[in-house]
Image (tube, rainbow, N blue to C red):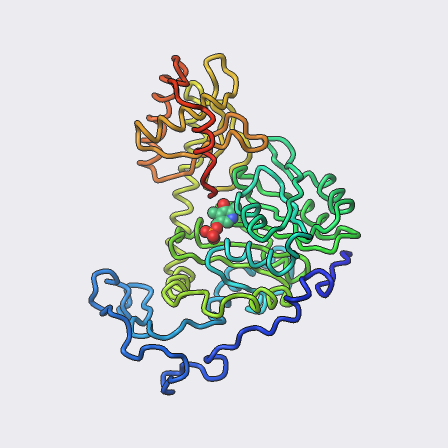
Length: 426
Ligand SMILES: *Cc1c(COP(=O)(O)O)cnc(C)c1O
């Protein structure tokens, strides 16, 4: 069993933090009280129910999320218990435990990016503590760590195509490297598309000497097989946090809603440090709508369409001359493929030239990942609609033929293009 101890693992100043109390903690907006406590504007927003911006979203119209436009002058609910309950209903599958998630197991934030940062601020003392990451992985873990003056310990994933956790190396690092407070693990991985093995995660969670938290980022879990999510496992493991988001499977990246499932004491710490009104009322209303039976049905059919296009890419990409091996897994809404030079070897110059020409000449933007650990010569391609995939496949075939026919560099400064290609995180 893990020696995890919240009292010695979390930052002392966070453990003793008195959370901000807001006006509505004592007296809720029940529609009857006259609310003269929050310095809000009782006249409401300069938007009417007939504003074209919000057509279909008006209260009681029955055709949309139906949040109350006239309520926008009030601060949002700081606790979001209704929304959290819907998330619990969705993620309690009893596939991994007989226990049931409750709203006490949840933190909701402005995207999972807020949770990634909040965890760092809860557990890592700046200039002292570190996090463990497993490249190739999502860029925000290291960006957020750096912002918080938290160091990195890198233990690469095992080589493609499995991109499995190197559990022996991870456990050895957790034994020997001092001050590691969290391990950020991504499953399905970005940019790998590989699900991590439950047994490997269990080995990290049950490390015999490590007093720290395993953070499992499940941003792409809705594209993985059913019951793959380990969210409900937080009811079994006090040192597990599972991150999810509405940005991918639910198609709501603009809404900015992310969730952290955790044992209640850890979830409480995250909720204590957050800004009180971090979730906008429209965001909460749109998310609640997404979790309604109508919303979930649309999500399921969109995911089925994306899965079908993913299967199509797996069939059609290998037929294009110059496309190399699939690297990584297929549990996500993207695929990672090698681009080959004229001699048939994976090649970063080719991949970069294809990346650049696709964007500049064809209006098709993919992601160059060739500089990431174990992804040499690779492009990461998000699965789009049927029409988008058709256009991409056509453009890729023609672009690869041009590039492999000669003059890949065309006088451009390659270093500069690589720097640009790596500048963006997501
Ligand atoms: C896209 C992505 C996220 C999503 O972040 P949000 O802030 O919720 O939009 C989180 N983790 C990974 C690995 C991602 O690829």
